[in-house]
Length: 520
Image (cartoon, rainbow, N blue to C red):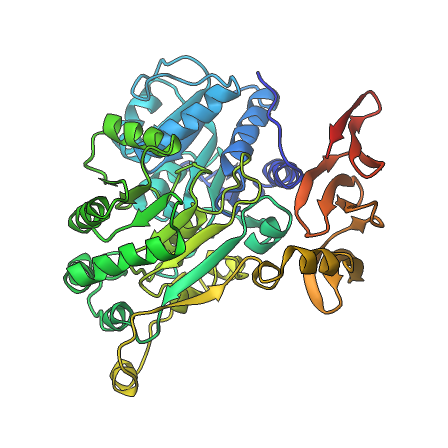
């Protein structure tokens, strides 16, 4: 098997998961004979979109195969696209899995299955003696469904791991009946500060814009508790609103490529037609688009042959493309999970463009229900069902409408580097000369007087050596990296030692016998 390389936070999460699986499972239940039997340990894992959940998932699978002699591994997802993505990840690390999910005799101990197929064929697997020792659920916020509950009830002895960026439901359902405990990662802002996710600018439609007022008047609700598709289409799928969508992209993301989230197929096609007519190469994709064409269009997007992918519920989960430079929300939502999944597609780091700043264009006022994407969330209360993963709806709509005239402009609510971008190169150079480290509650950051450049998230920061400072994370097993004066991560903190030579060369080492020189 190929070694899976993990970042420090992924390695820490892997250790926590394994610790839970080994030490857990203490609860017991009575079987049909009235005998007490041990229940397999279970844990739900929260990691923000773009931080490598599939790598951690693959590492859990590898740990199980290496350390547990019997039992299969079942990786279960609710969409075929997610199944294929997980298969590709397993292939990347040479973890063998069955080629056909419908064959009980498929080779290897790992099966990647859609929950729909599994619900229809689980009895066949049981008759064939296929018993899971580990069940891994991808996008586990969907695990409240009866089909997952049945899977867990049939396999009480199996260890269970659920992976998600958003452990919440609009219905305020609790996950505690499926998973014993929730493990959470640092918040999204910490990942941005440390250079693992991209910084972003955020613009939102005005409080008294036509679109915001239309969203405020939405009254219908679908079966999932979100806005009714038909009513959204009636109020927002109109030529004037679609033209304003284009104007927003042209103004804030001209020359960039990105993803647009539409209400339904009709809306997506209307947006793509408008964009194409005005010179923005776009394509509309949805669940009815043939898989081969979807793959072809995504690859064309990666090659920059297409500027814009207008989609309907396709790229809010499981889409891994760090080339996304802007996100446009043309559909409102009440779901916190859907909101974070949509904006999270743009925060993946592009290793070819380390200075990437994602532009988030919110034409439907989702910001006013949920706040910024990197706002801290109380995941524990949502996991327990104490709080709903649902946005706060605007009140006093009629009063708001009568209070102001319609203003269809956009409002900037966040700029990645607002103050420093306003400076001239000379002013910026003088400003950065005054960057200093500071300590708060045992953690270190960077600042210029009262201006925080890097929040205090590091356990170690050295003095500046030229324009660079060595940063450290962890306590007992500290790992080191390198920051510049702007707080950008030049070298991720994943080395046992980092030494700066003459201000332009760095020696990094993972062990005494493994070191190399990096030119800055």
